[in-house]
Length: 287
Image (cartoon, rainbow, N blue to C red; front, side):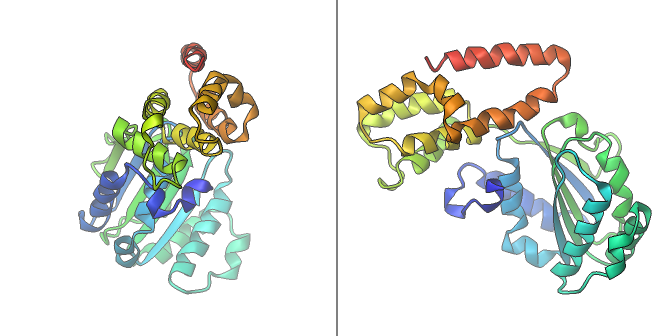
């Protein structure tokens, strides 16, 4: 949920990606287009797409919009009802009461009829099911109104294939470059200093950021931990020495393990072993 409500001033490193998407949404061809944003958990997919979704240029351009969190597990009927209600609400209209008792086929028909003359934007956030798009795509008419659909996923295999349609695109979100990662860390840790890292902490901070591998989730979580510590070099040294145990005991860091574990459990068996070894080696780097 926190990804949906990050203030604009806190966002670092996604500006160019955001501007690309805004341009694709409002300047592209009139046919319906589907964009899949791919990246591991904690990379900032939801944050990026939310900043695009809420942009004034985007909100004005589309007749109706809907943001749907899919995750796992999900119920198709509930997703379709939620979408219909969001579309009606976007146009300041009341959704038909009968949708609460409709089955999937009737809900899809209701959606198709409603969207037939609309330029619509739909976000499906955090899709895991490889068959999800095949099950739901018939709900969205290709009406040549410039409609757009954005999907966020962790596994590229789940994305609608560009081999199936020229209107399907896959966008692989990269990790933050080091300088942007360092900027994000400093914004989080040195708020009283205006986001500027004091000279005595530059080496410490750059070392911590380097170990985060450009993953915004890790940078923000670890930055949140250090923001609570006194700005004393000896204090920071103690935290660095005990950071492995902090992963288990500090609530600010447990979210990293929890979110990445979803990606781990979704891996095929042979890759789980590789990930497990890498994870333990990387944790050892904090000693």
